[in-house]
Image (tube, rainbow, N blue to C red; front, side):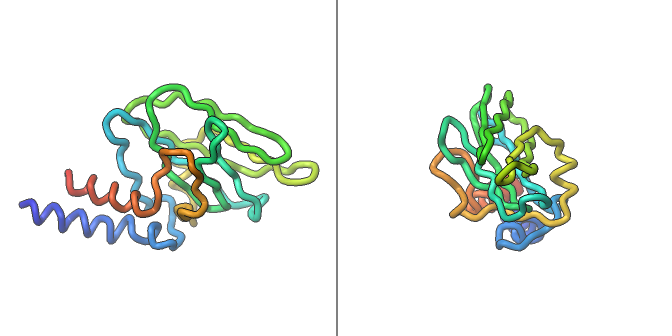
Length: 168
């Protein structure tokens, strides 16, 4: 029985999680987002393509970089329940305050709007449907992540998806 669950978990990761982890772009509908562990909540930050595709959207909390989002990229941030403020900045600064509850998964998107000299990042709450509706999305690379804790690295996304499937 245990071997069957492990095999099923491996197959789940192979069929659902691997393409995004291997660096291939896939549809947002095909991304396996693991559940938030007990005592935490999580936020899926993503950036649709469009205006300012060459600019990064660096998401920060408490002055520390969590990760940069290029066009068509995403990352999952696990964090403690409570109020959190995230900032993005170029020629202008934008702040997004979210109340994170235990066990929930929220979504936030960063769009680049037209600015005077350079694009202006706009960080806002989003619906899961917006993320799932993306035709081409890719997990950020480990090099894009900053020193702030909580963002799941590519190898951790695979481990989380495997552990979740094994528990089912």
